[in-house]
Image (cartoon, rainbow, N blue to C red; front, side, top):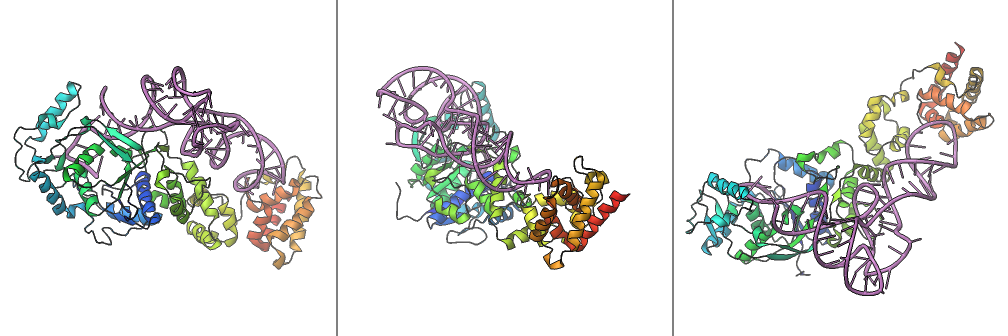
Length: 479
RNA sequence: GGCCUUAUCGUCUAACGGUUAGGACAUCGGCUUUUCAAGCCGGUAAUCCGGGUUCGAUUCCCGGUAGGGUCACCA
C-alpha cells in the first residue's frame, strides 16, 4: 500500500464557522508535522460549503491561530498554489464534474422528496426503533437531476466494508453504514462527504488525518472511491481529546476555548506545540520537552495513540515553564517587560518574576494585585510585622541598626547581590538566629509577608532606597 | 436503540507473551532556608471485571462492564 516514492501530501481543512480550538489545531499540527518530516506538501483548504453556518472573519482567525503556533503551509487560500482555488465554494465545477460521472454511471439521482417527507420517514423509523435508511425509500425510477433538488448517491454494492487505518489498524463497518447520502445539496453546494473526497483526489492528498468521529462515515467514503474507481488515500485516525471532566470529547459546545486565547494568556507557541504534540502521540524515549524542530524530527504516525486523552492544563503550565527556562535572557526580558508597567521594567527583577510564573499572563495578576508595587513605591505596613518570633523589639531595632551601619559603609560599586549577601550573612551568623535580623530587614524593604530575600531586594532597590527604607523602619520602632 | 470504537497510578503515558509494571504532571514528605518562589532528594499510587489460549497474559481470543463516536440538505 505504502508507496515509498510518492510524495507525502497532507491538508488541514477547517470550516469557517468561528474560532478553532485545541482539537482542531492538534489535527493541523500532526498533518503539518508529518508533511514536514517527509519533505512533503501541507495544504490549507477551506471547507465553506455551509453558507448558513459561515462566520465572517473565520478564515483570518484560523490563519492567525496557525501562524502563531508556527505552522506554515505550502498551498492555501491566502498564498495560492498549483491546486487553486483552496475554498470549496470556488471549486463547484469540480464537484459537478464528478457528480456527472456518477450520474452517467447510474450511481446518482435526484431526491424527489421534500425535506418534510424525508423527515417523516425518519420519524417513523425512530418510532419503530429501527435505523433509518434513505435507501429503503429510494424511488423506483430515480428522477433526472436538474440542480434544484438534492443529488443523492445510489449505493448499489451494499456490503460490509473493511479497511486499514494507519493508527487503528483493521477497521470494519456493517452494511447499515451505507446509504444514499446527499452529494450536492439543493442550494448547489456539495456536502462534506462528497466535496472532501473530490478535493483530496484533485490535490493529490496521500494521508487523510482526522478525528475518530469520521470512522462511522468511512464506509460512505469508500463506496464513493469504488463508484468513481479512484484510489483511496491512507486513513490516519487521531484519538479524541477529552474535556477536563473526562466525560466528553472536547468541543466548542462544551467550552473549548478559542486557540488564540492561549496567546492572550501569555503561553509560548513552542510550549503550546509541545503540549499539543503529546495529546495523542508520544515519541520513543522519555524526553517530554521538545522544540518544534525536535518534534518534527521525532514525529512518527505509527506512534499516534489509539485511545483518547484528557486535556490537562496543569501539564500545559509545566511544559510552558520548561520552555520559558530555555529562553535566551533577551527573549525572556522582552516577554516579561511586555507585561510590566514601565516603572517595573527593571532588568534585575526578571529572574524573580520568572521563577514565580508558569505563563507570562501570570505577571498581569502579580501587577494587578499590587505585590510588585514595593519595587517603586515605599511600602506601608504595620510596625509589629517587623518583629521576628519572640525577639524583643529593642533587639530587632539594634539588629537593623547594625545592618544599616554595614550597608551605609558599603561603596556604591559594591552594592551588589553577592556582596550584600556576604555582608549581611556575616551579621546574621552571629545572631542567635539569622531570622532576627534577616526577617525585619526583608520586611522593612518589601512590607510583605512573602517576598524574595533581602539581599536581592537591596540589590534591586539600590543603596539609597535601601538605606532610606531601613531608616524608616527604625524610626517606626522608636515611636 | 443499531452500528463502530476504546480501556495501565488522580492525570498523560512506557513496557518482542517472561520487568521489583518504567517515566512525567499533580500530590505528600525531607533537604535548603528569614518568609515565599525556585531548586535538589525521596514516598504514596495503576494493568476495569470474568472466562479462555499458554509453562507463563498488561500484552492474544471471547463475554461483561464502563467510556467515547456515529446514525443531517453540519463538517
